Length: 315
Image 1 (cartoon, rainbow, N blue to C red):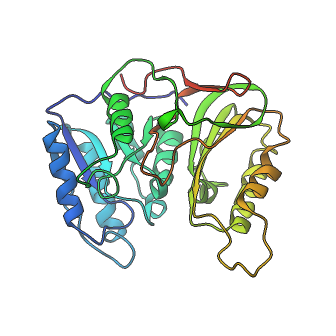
Image 2: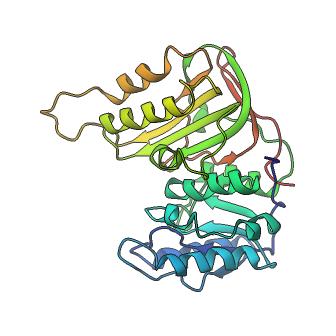
Image 3: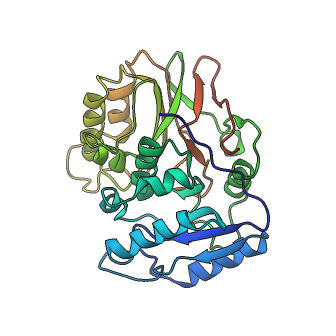
């Protein structure tokens, strides 16, 4: 699949807002997020169905799909930022008209449940998307985290090569294996990525670098998802490298039950691999969050302790 980069964002451009998964329980967050974007000099268009609810979904599948299609079709909209993750993106995958995405490539931002859409877009259209800040999660606060903010806006407004990725406060990456590798970045939320395995929406893992993050899953569930990913990638032999982001609140909830720790599980799956594996990369459900551009060529070198994205994310 040929990689397609969206055009860079400029001040005065229109940013579209959609909710393809769950809705926020506090709608003032949407208002505050819109004001934040407008203050930066962008115009904002909120999807017609944003604010609706249908159980744990932000409206029916048809309503959420309509906003997704509408924002990609709209020639004035140059970027799309999702309200939040939650649940429901995967329900849309077989309903999306991917020709609309292919004919209208644009910046598309979110993470967590949004992983399903991002990997499907990459598979079906080659579009580079961004695992980055969301409107009602990150951009609604009175003080948006400075690191998250600067890293994200630099990535979507500059056509310069991204270069080496550095944790906030220069916090070290942990090295689980020694080695070098180079491949296209794929991945996202582990549960969502695993949910795509065996479908036509899963990314191509051959010669890839996989990045993973997760939240709220106990170690035995992480274990189960990792062995599924392991088997789907021929014991990770198809893969050129692995980056492990933040696994938030992934501990045993019942302290009386015997359990492996998260670190035990991570070690079991990754420490004996013959490819480079980094741990403690600041990406996931955290305030200081590295934006990750899916699909781009990425180099890993654990001996020299660097991760480098060797091209720009936007054209």
